Length: 478
Image 1 (cartoon, rainbow, N blue to C red):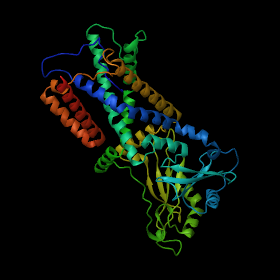
Image 2: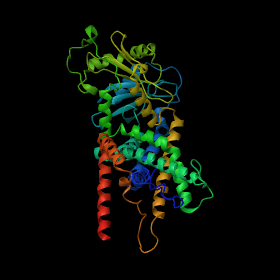
Image 3: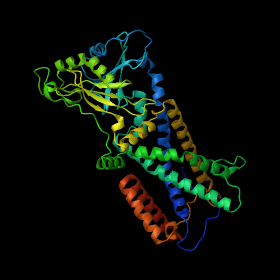
Image 4: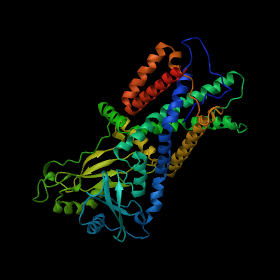
C-alpha cells in the first residue's frame, strides 16, 4: 500500500471507546499518512527502476543478440581453442574464467580481469563456438554477468548512479515499504469490517465501479494495495539484504547463526599444489600478476576440467574459473538460470582431472537456500519470462497505488479560505489514546526495528521530531 489514509472515507466515522481501549487505527493511520507522503517518492523511483530491471534479462537478449547468439551450425571446437582466440583478441588482459556455450546457437563468454573497469566488472569476449571467431566484447557486471544495459538499469535501481551515497534512497524505500504496505492492509481490512458491521456495502478485494470521485480513487487504492501487499513485503525484505546498513546487520546475523552461503574449497595440497613453472609466488588474485606459463597450461586443461565437472553432475550453464596461481584448483559452478532451483559447484585438480571438492545446493543451510531462492526471484530469474512479467506488473500496480494515494491526499485539501493548501493529516494524539502499556510496547518494538534497520529508525525519529515541531507551532498559534 502506498500513500495517505485508507480510513478517512467520511462514511466511516472513527471508532470510539473508553480511554486506553481505543484501537491502533488512529496511530496506524497517522503513520501510514506521513510515511506515504514523505517516502512514496523514493518507493515510486524504486518501482519504476525495479520494473525495468525485472525485464532487463529479456531486453539484453534483444539488444545484444549479435554477441549472445550465432547462426553457425556444426560441432564446437575445444573450449581451450575458443579461449586462445579471445586472448589473442585481448592480449593485454588476463583471462580469469569462461562460460562455455550451453546450447546450439549460443556463444561462449571468455572473461578477463580489466583494471580499467569498475568494481565487480569484468570484460567478456564473445566467441562463436563453431567457427571460433570473436563476435565482440562487452563489460559484464556481478556474479550474474549482466551486460551493459542490464547493469545500467541495475545501478539505477540500486543507487541512482550516485555511488555509495545513493544507496540510501533504495534502503529508505525498502525499509518503509513493508511498514506502509502492512499498515495499509490493516486500515483497509478494518474499514471493510466496520462497514459490514454497520450493514453498509463494503468490498475488500474488488472495486465498486459505480463509485465516483474520491470514493472510486480510494477503492482502487485500497483494493490494489491489498492484492500486491505480499509482493511488496517480499521485495522489501529481499531488497534490504542488498542495503548498506540493514544489509550489514543481516549479514552479521547470518554469520552468527551459521547461515552464510558456503563456498567450494579450491585449495590444492600435495604434489598437485606444486607450481608448474619456476615463478613461485607471482600469482595474484583476480588475474593480477599471473604467471603466463601457468596460465597457458591451465587454459590447455580446461576441456578435461569441464568434462570432470560434467561427470560430477554439472551439466547446465556453468562458469569455470581459470587459476592464475599455483596451488589453486579450477572452480566450476552452475549459474543462475530460469527454472533452476539450486546451483552446485566443484573444485577440479587441473593436473589430474580429479574432483577435489563438491558442494551441492542440497547441502547448503536452509537459510542460505531460502536467501538464494528469494534473491533469484527478486532478480526476475527464477521462472524466466513469467517472473519478469509478474514483477513488471507488480511495479506498475505499485505506481498506480502511489499515484492514487497522492490523489487522495490532494482531494482532502480545504477548498475555501486559501489559494494554496494540501490535505490535512489525521488527528494528533493517537499514541496517547492507546494507553501506556501498548504505547511502551510499540516504542520498544520501534526501537528494536530501528536499530536493525537504521535508515528506518532515523527517518522515523525525523518524522516524530517534525510532527512534534508542527504540533508546538499549531498550539502556539491557537
